[in-house]
Image (cartoon, rainbow, N blue to C red; front, top):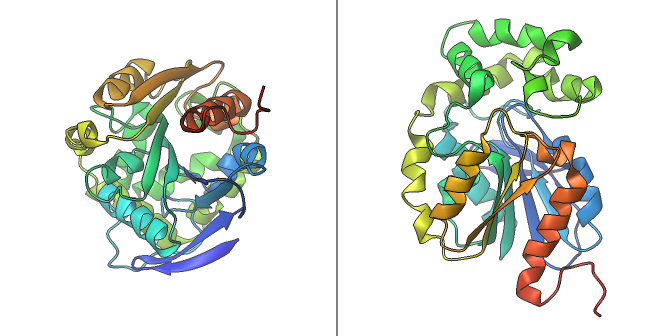
Length: 286
């Protein structure tokens, strides 16, 4: 892991280096860079793949106490990250959280292509029973700590009202332990996540949608066909708002498309990025 000091604090990131073009993969609440491992492995031969660990619960380093950790604050951290690494013409790929949408029309000059995979959007915030439960717990003193105890029990994690409802395939419990260890062991990490829950407004992504029509670059909305938390209908509406948006569904996948069907997602990413180059990256010329 590499690290970089930003205005909000120090964040970790992985960077494969090399490749033709830059792909930045962005995780959601309660996940770290490992949620993208299969996608990184698939794409690293052709692209420089960068994955920042944003302060959304699975980060290992607490942010500064005065840091803005609202959804807009997280978007600002992402924008600063792109700037500090001088990443340009980025293919920005977002999952679960709606962070990337908040850059559009504000700080999107380094984004060449936008990919939104099953994420918070429009009026679906907080999303599903999982999102509503998390945000309610984050607003009550001690509520987040109590809720997190359920992640110590594999049976409870597999329930559809928990992580089990975010993926079509069972999530290895070793990954769950990795993702939730910081929250379970560090009070300052719980403080950071609680700050996000308290300061992110319900209409955040409805307001962001008003600017999506300004994004004049290629956009792909790749939604899990069996997503229970982020309904495919939301994805279709999202694609219609983007002037150059295209909607596809990833088969046999829930919210965590990169875990359920990384092969299909990577095929769509290659096709999407390659459209501007005459053929898909990684394919032989005929």
